Structure formats: structure tokens, C-alpha cells
Amino acid sequence: MDSIQLNLLQQVAGLHEIPEGAYNIRANGKSAARNTTANIDIVTKQDKQGIDIIIKPGTKKESVHIPVILSESGLQEMVYNDFYIGEDSDVVIVAGCGIHNCGVDTSKHSGIHSFFVGKNAKVKYIEKHYGEGDGTGENVMNPTTMVELDENSYMEMDTVQIKGIDSTKRVTKAKLKDGASLVIREKIMTHGNQTATTDFSVDLDGEGSSANVISRSVAKDKSKQVFYAKINGNNRCAGHSECDAIIMDEAVVSAIPEITANSVEAELIHEAAIGKIAGEQMIKLMTLGLTEKEAEEQIVNGFLK
Image 1 (cartoon, rainbow, N blue to C red):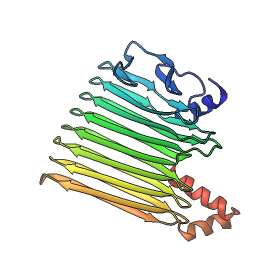
Image 2: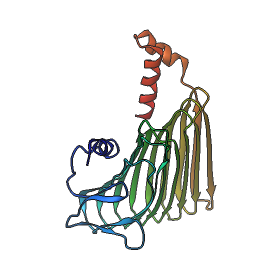
Image 3: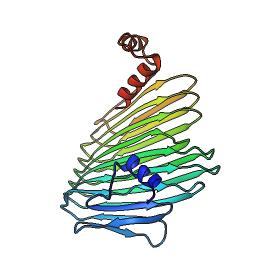
Image 4: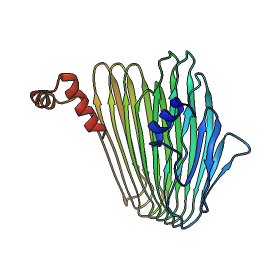
């Protein structure tokens, strides 16, 4: 890999070198490096672009890195990755996509990640999207995440997009069985004329299932954001969605939560708050010697931390 690709790899996956454990690194539409372990196998799909990640039951304290990087302007791809997490396992999966676009054509990555999480399994999924480049071509990312949680399983998702993505449509759909739990934390920042849409839909089908969906975002300049969160309580369950956004300049932010109780035992809550940076926060920091711009950056960074 060249220096540009190595920088993208560091930005989206925190990798300064090839990681330990299982990994599959995809660069400019092709597999650049792969490693499997005794408990984690990675298999190339035969019918379409993508891979199957198969984690054996009982696998503990192992990780999988599957970053994607695009450094050729105008490259557009659709990738399908399926994750089969065995019963009683406890693993960390690090994904993410980075685009470096110095041309005039649109660079686009769309990915459909499907998770099949076995009984009593625990998964932490980390996904970061990042864009850069001094060309006029757009950076576009459209991730779709499909989740099926079996009985008493747990999945935690941390997704971040804070720079360089001109357009994104982020879709997450989940179905939970008895005792299953899902936690989603999303952080997004847009600026310029960027647009970002996130769409969460969770079906709490199982008795004792729960979901907590939390989104924090900052919209600057003339950017636009739309946040959808739909939770269906179909059994004795607990569901919570929260959107907290800072709006600046001429940006537009919409929060559209929806909760539906299809059982008298469902307990569902939604919260949404959109507002500007509080003036007293700016004043306090500026009295400490910060400029207005520095104070603003401190507040935004703390909000998205």
C-alpha cells in the first residue's frame, strides 16, 4: 500500500500496521490482505462482491478487522458482507471505509452488512467513515446494516462519520428475540453542502428484549441531516431512542422518531433535541483565552466525544 492508503487505513480502523488476528483489507475494489484464525474464517463470496465471516461458537476475546479504502477517483462499488457469530462467543468487529478523491468523478462505496448473532453471544461492532481529497468529485457512502439477534445475545454498535463525506444514507434494521439487547451509538458531523440521512428500524419481537438507539450530530454551514428512528415493541420489552443535535449557520436538521407498542407490556421512550450552541458556554471558554472559533471547536469536539 502507498502512503495515501495507509493513512486511510489508520483513519477508519486505527491501524498503523497489519493487525493481529483475523482481517480482510479491501483496497480499490480488490482484496489487499487477509488472515484467518483457528476460530474465525473469512470466505470470498462466489455470487457477488463480498465476504462471509464465520466465527465459531465459544470464541472469546478475538477481533476481526474488515476496512475498505478507495483511493482511485470515480471508483464505485457495492459489497455484501455476512457475519455468522456462533453461540456463546464474545468478539470485536472493526469495519469502516475511507475515500481519498482527488479527481472530478464521484467515488462511492455501498455496503450491506448482515449479522446473524447466535444465542448468548456478545458482539461489539465499530464502524467509521472518512473522506478526504482536493478534487471536485463527491465522496458518497451508503451503509446498510441488518441484524438478527438470537436469544440472550447482545450487540453494541459504535458508528462515526465526522469528515469528508458529501452524501450518505445510513440504514440499520434489527430483529431481536427473547432476552436480546441492542445498543447503537451514532456520531455524525456535516458541513458545506453535505447531506446525511440515518434510518433506524428495530423490531423487539422477543420477551425481555431491549434496544437503546442514541444519535449525536453537528450540522454546519448549509448541510442537511435527517434522523429517523422507529422502534416496534411486539412483546414485553424496553425501547429507547434519542437524537441530540447541534445546528449552526444555515444548516437544517430533522428528527423523526416513531415508537409503536403492539403489546401492553412494551415500554418505549423517544427523545429529540435540536439547538444551537449555548451562548454562556462560548462566553465561559472565551474568558479563558480562547477565540470564538477555538471555543466553538472545543464545544463541538466535547459534544461528539
